[in-house]
Image 1 (tube, rainbow, N blue to C red):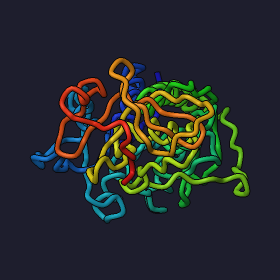
Image 2: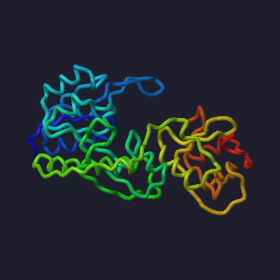
Image 3: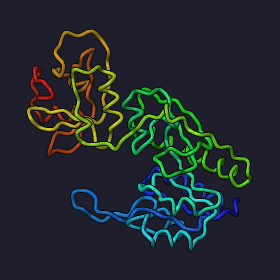
Image 4: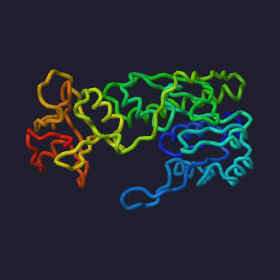
Length: 313
């Protein structure tokens, strides 16, 4: 148990294991700050962020500012008078006025081995770039983007068949456990800070829908990594007869081929085969514009796909 007063700041599901673990281990969570409820989906229904839902379930006080830099936000945090602020995918950059409030500092859980993959989408980009390992970093926050001193770090291997969701959930749990260890070190005065080397920094910018467009002239591994890095959102895609064609899951096959990139071959047992520059991809879960997500087998039962079709046109 820790007597340190903690403000927890987070918004999406990535932050849930950390908040839940701090609560279950009886840390003093004096308040939770998360993003406002926002409209989502086709119906634009107002949805509360995952951290708010869990906080209310745990009976924790929740504050949802539109702008964390506002005077009211800074006053709210100063009134709580936290010893430490814990940040996990909050979604806004903290100003100096807040960073200077807690005497033990503001610490952040970042799902990469900093200084690699600073930014908004480190898990996605690690997969897209074909990394074989990643990890979590607990860092002391400063005014830069993920540029603060490293307090602790832990590696993990990336499985070849691991998609974003699986890796996201593993890193969220790993980060929560490392967070608790690190807070103990901070409170006891045993934490060691290590400055990041800015020359080794790489970046993981926000994802865009346009960035998911598949180039069938690329290698099988590049296309496969794009698919698993962008599943389930915004999703890798191509065009089938002029319609956007999303690809959620696939199986890569590297082999010599003389078939043109993007050409389709049909097999009802395996799915839809699409050729790349050095092999082919077996499409498993797909979605044509205006249709629901389905398996390739389900799609072929209702769509007359010609074997000489070229994807991407």
